[in-house]
Structures are given as C-alpha cells and as structure tokens.
Length: 312
Image (cartoon, rainbow, N blue to C red):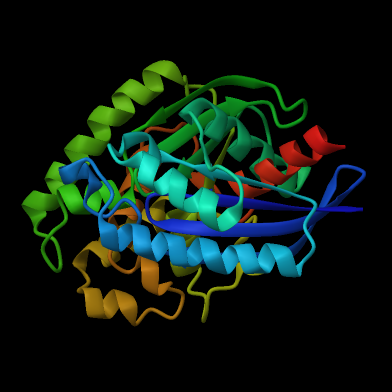
C-alpha cells in the first residue's frame, strides 16, 4: 500500500486529499478544504491580489505540514482556472514551490476534465451509472463537462468553459439578495456559454448526469433538508430538476445572513452558492434527464489514481 497526496487549488478553495492506493483501490486518509478565494477580483483586474495570495500560501503551508505528518510518498498539486487567467501567475507558482517543494501544475481544462471523470466514475457505484455519463465540475471560475462511458472509462468529448460560482457572483449577483435584473443577466451569461459548451459536448443522449464540487453537493444537501453537511449522505444522492429549481429560487431570495444560517452551508460558500446553483439549474434545463447525482469524489481522487499509476 502506497500513500499519495493531491492538492487542487481553484478559484474559490484549495483542497487536499491524502489517500492510500492498493491494487487500484483508493482509501481516504484525510480530506479537507480551505476557502482562500484565490480568484477574488481576478475577473476585473486580471491578476491575483496580495491578500488572496497570502491566504493561499497560508493554506499551502498547512497542507505541507499534513503531508509530512502522514508520510506521503508522492504529491501532485494542480491549479485551475484562476491560475490560467492571472497575469502574475509566476508569483503564485514561486510561492507554492518555496512552501511545498514542488511546482503547481497549471493544468489545461481538458486534463482537468479527464481527472474529474476518473475520480467521479471510480468513486460511485456502477449501478448508478448508465452510459453515456455526463460529468460536470462546477468550480469558482470554470466548469468542466466530460461525456463518456462509465464501464470502459472511454471519454467521448469534453470541454472547459469560463463560468463558475465566483465568476458569476462577482460579475452580476452583487445585491443582497440579488435583483431580478441581476439574476436575468446571470442566466443570459450562463446560457450563452452553455450554447458553446454543448456545441462541443453533445448531451442529446445523456443517460446519467453527475455533478461535482461544492455548489452541487450543497444544493443536494439543501434539497434533501439534511440537518448538517454529511458527505456520506450526499455522495451518490439524487436531486431532481424540480428540487434544484426550488433550492435555487430559495437561495436567490435569501440575504447573506439567511444563507449563512443554513446548517449545511460552508462559510466559504455563503457568498457564491446562489451563483453556483444557477449554473447547475441552467445545465439541468438543457439535459434530456431530470436528475443529478451528487459526487464527493472528483478531481482530487482522479489525481491520486493517476499519480499512483505513474509512480507504481
């Protein structure tokens, strides 16, 4: 049995997975998330702020201590949307290298999509996955779509587009709660981007839709009225389009204080969850099926699987 670590640094959060892999099976040792909002303001300025970098570097230092404590054999860190967009990405890369001892890999959207597919499909029961399967990872600054066969792991098509919970919130949803006009502007932006995405990924024959990341899992937790955030109850759960519609409308009508009071709400998701729910809702309105399966296994798990194959 060999131990690996994966770090995913996105627009909104930085996440860590430490896991053992034996005979191709992953056993989680530690999984955690810190909200650092690395991409805060990047849609307007084009670069990372000093405050965002400080928050991120503090999280990297914390994760480096955990990796050392758990005696990890190999580590890989990937950086997604914000690190592709920032003019001062070199500052971010240098800072991570000094703290973690490795370079963060600024992965292309295509690789990000492949890793998400691997992590999601291998982490869910095969009985839930009728192919073709569409995987969607709704992040802070980007959303990935991957269409493939769950049985063979073969990927048919994929794309990454610049729509996410942070990007939509900063661009449009600025009032508390957002106005009807702001909501409509957000929907128009999302729909325009989805038009392009689904030109590349044909969803006509999709039989299963799996949603990844915090926007989806939080909406699922709200849809099922969980008394607290329970990753075991959320993983593999189904939410219908009607449930997603209802949760989205409720979130859009709430003030920040009311969203923060929801027992399933992570503090780092309070400001951006309505934007993420809107992205999910608009995706589901385009699909030929009326439900989403929420997955707690995702990009991080895919990184560990790939890392174990490379090292072994």
